[in-house]
Image 1 (cartoon, rainbow, N blue to C red):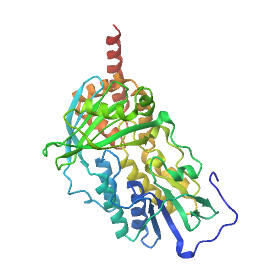
Image 2 (image 1 turned 30 degrees about the vertical axis):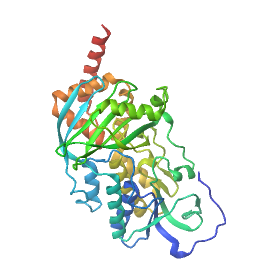
Image 3 (image 1 turned 180 degrees about the vertical axis):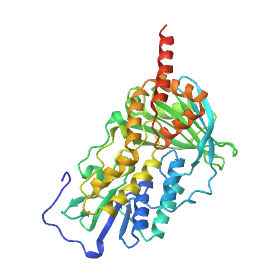
Amino acid sequence: MSFRSCARWDRPRMDDMWDVAIVGAGPAGSAAALRAAQLRPELRVLLLDRADFPRDKPCGDGIAAHGRDELARLGLPTLIDDYRPTPRLTVVSPGGVRVSAEAARPNHVVPRRVFDARLVAAAQARGVEVRRHRVKDLVFDGSGVVIDGRLRARTVVAADGAGSVVRRLIGLAAAAEKHTAIAVRGYADVPEEDDVQLIAMQKAGWPAYAWSFPIGDGTANVGFGMLLPRLRAAGAPGRQVLHGRLAELLPDRPARELRAHHLPLSTGRPTPGAGRVLLAGDAAGLINPLTGEGIYYALLSGRLAAEAAVESPGDPLALYRAKLRGALGRHLRTTDVLARLAQHPGFIDAAIETAVRRKEVFDLLVEVGLGNGTVPAPLALAVGTRWLRGSLRAGR
């Protein structure tokens, strides 16, 4: 095994033997707990987190339609029904091309302080034990995993975020800087009737964009994100760059409660675990490299990790890997390619120009950026042709 094993260890009490132990109670971890309890209510499921809930988490707070589908699969179809949907999306490309349309299925914006606490409460209601605990050590003993010398589980799901301690403990490196983004998030006052999600891209330091996602209560989640290497190359303190560009792109929405966070993008995703430890959500590098979306991936991967743990307790990793491949394989390969092409802002301009003229292209871009969509060859050819023509015109 790639993480520490031992021939001798102090056997924990049998009442501390868990079928599934989950580290991290964000969307990925809570989804894993909910799914395990949903499939096998008699299982002993333990959910650990270093914080008490509710707690804030820097994030865009956007929950797209695919995320709501996952909530329904977990038996929570009405969890966020009291939050108003945001039906329209406006995107401004690096070159200033603007497209605005109603999404095929509306999105929601729910502060993580609320969303995560509701998920944890739902898991507790299903019999999952929730404990505040900061994991420091893992030991593989042949038939399970010992956590900090006193908790033992047949399978561990690591859902402890971008800086995952568990990922490090099992010997998997953090995402390389070139596959890491950094964003700053805050909240701003907006008109209560504002129901349009805005993404405003910036050519300087590209790929980079600001967002404004209205919650429905007169406030919006606002932020700005860019690749970490681009921030390093900006030649100014990170706080100055991130806060300054957010203010520049959204001058009418001064932000408060600004907090920065790293995003390990799926282009640099590690193997999804080792032995009986499965990585889910941000810990698995499952963040869309085109949009920074991670909640759908978190809910999905947490659910699949729990299914693998329940259905194949002897070898959960093989089944988990197969489930991830089946659910996201083609999509992740698509976003890998598009992320490379998107290094050229003209490609994004061409994609947005195409979306202005064809609503089905707009819908497909939303599916790729917020769900599990792929790009048909004819559309790729159409965007590529427009990009090539634009490049030729620019070169004259």
